[in-house]
Image (cartoon, rainbow, N blue to C red; front, side):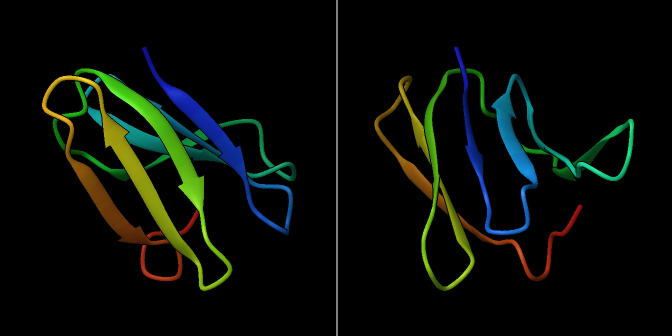
Length: 72
């Protein structure tokens, strides 16, 4: 399971197993921006303030991260 979302700059954020990664269109690599336990990340979304929300299927929790402090 996992999810992905885009920001206004075209960066792609992916919630996968154990981390959140970011891919910037100007690069060819993924950058890990958070290494946490996302065994069953179901949804990932950005708000207008630059907060990234990750919803967990496993326990129903929602984790909030700032993309301004965790950038690509």
